[in-house]
Length: 609
Image (cartoon, rainbow, N blue to C red):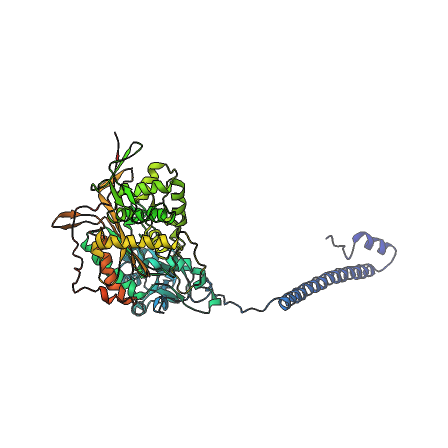
């Protein structure tokens, strides 16, 4: 802005020439200047007033709109906000079917550091290294004396460790309260529970989330405030689970096995009473997963749910039961068992020469490959596939675990005659022991499909009828004779009427073919045979036991004795009493397997050159 001079020279000179007072010119110019200044000030004041009025209108308008929205919304309880983390709710407990705690929460603390607030960072590093041996003193010193403003030391510590850190007396070491998930029974049911970790976390709180097993499968339910802290009741029985793990661990050691697994399933409800995979782990200190090599070498691998095994002669009951259902045979029907049997360029043999004919029952009792294939040929390829599909061997199990989809059976893409033959005696189709347990439970349930579950007391729709009751009963009767006079004789326990089938299958090589000295031995059983209530599956990975007759890897010498010991130990725990009229005055030996020549359920499928 150009200011007008108060005493312009030209006007002053002219005023003097005319005899006027020059001070009047200055006074007039001063008045005009003050008027302009006042006008500009008034304009600025008007703009400010309008701006302030607009702000007040906007603020009160926002408050009014928000009040209107709140008035028209549904009332709800607010959730507390925590700096750096949001804790949705306390995680619910997990219990067994009798209410015994399997997983719960415990108040603990974390410890973290503000290095810039430390008085003696080197001394603090040395003190922490003494308290936590897994921490490196040199690295702590570098971190404490560097540019870091914050760092975690431990996300959960015990009260004793907290006191020890407190005794260091370092103001830069701070504690934050939080909850941690605790599994009071250690290794017991570790694969079922899975484990947990921290999700959203800050220095004053942390969110506990499931990372595997039912902890992850039910993560949303366990954290849902609508459940009001009600525990998740699993179907397993803690006492039965503990006994199964103890017996399987002993059996695994005696049989020199790489791994072992077992499952006890209640037929009427489909509820899993116990499920074990060995080796296992402690969910309180969950190990890291393997990134290379065979996944089954990791203790995190669940052999019962995730294992994909060719289950050998345990499959033989399926084509026989289907043929009984279709009316193609009866238990006494004569079946051609002449060997060798030719299918294309392949020959199928039995371990022993059973003669030209066996009854359908003896095909199962003696575990004849040839006889089983003859019966499967009567059924036909398409009907065989559909029956196995109905039994659940084409899809993952519906068990409430995040690992279930990884256990989808390996089903042949093509199903020629030779595939139909090998599948009938348990080779060419790989499934989990849980699939096998569900299929045996379906047969033992009068042919009505059983779906396994880990949740106790849940009402579910009745399964479809995939097999007639009469055919199912005849199949169970055949399985009973396998134990009384067949390859499962060491499972005979007076008073418990165990029915079952052995299966010994060679393990496939990664590059094709099969190992000659590695197999999976399985015993699938139902008891009591006269009124089936439970299915018990025992599987041993690469077992080997030596006796008077030499080394044996068959299911009859490895898995069956372990299953017998399990029935002895578990029957009293599940309230199953033996039939007194069948109890004999003899005591069966414990883990003293009778080593016999390899069981006839071993497979000999030789290419015809």
